[in-house]
Image (tube, rainbow, N blue to C red; front, side, top):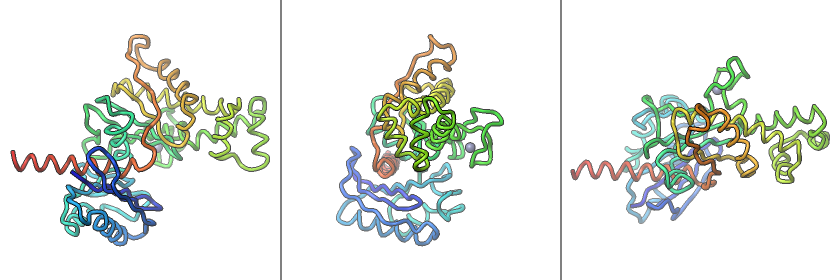
Length: 320
Ligand SMILES: [Zn+2]
């Protein structure tokens, strides 16, 4: 059974026709008309019609950044788009004549990782995506965790430092301020200021401000300063994972985002910090820590799979 996945971002809209094994049969993308809800809707409708032509499609899954209600039909709030309480599911269903589910983009990508990537052999998984901010998804008992109102699993806004650094969410001390790509740059700049092992960082900074590309180059070259910054980052991720592990008890933590390309160099300090901070250390089962397998297209693949599963449930309900 085929389904269509759409991923609406701030700069582009991606769409794909996906089979039940998560394989993409056709895909397309267009620039995102982020400022207009009507234009976004028109783009998505055109994209679905193009992808569905000549195929039998079970449903459409739409992934978008923002708060989605528990019924997966209304987008309460999307930070990068002009949506406020947008009844997107009803509008799309009416225009497409196909069942539609709306899902938070991090949840959709996490679901793809669970079904077809690093989480495919477990029942409980936490994904931490280290980008400009910290995102993630939680799967518990083979199901995506959304919370009672649909807006749960905002892992990046777990408080790790009371009264700590201010966060874009209006609170202070969120893990996003300590374990994001931006935090990694801050650690690198602090090391450059201090001299010593930060010497190479300071030299590179003298030519141009440090950025992700320079840091990843220095990490791969195993520069002492860049590795120290990465260990600081890993320490925070590991500490936060220990708190999540105490509550959720996943068999696996999957680390995604650009910085995850540093692989074991990042996973090692994460594991160390996890073991150090888990309650009843030494007696608590230790989960696996690994790098995300699905880098591109996770959003569209996950959204399509969620739409397909939802359609299958509806069919079983009708028949049963
Ligand atoms: Zn926050």
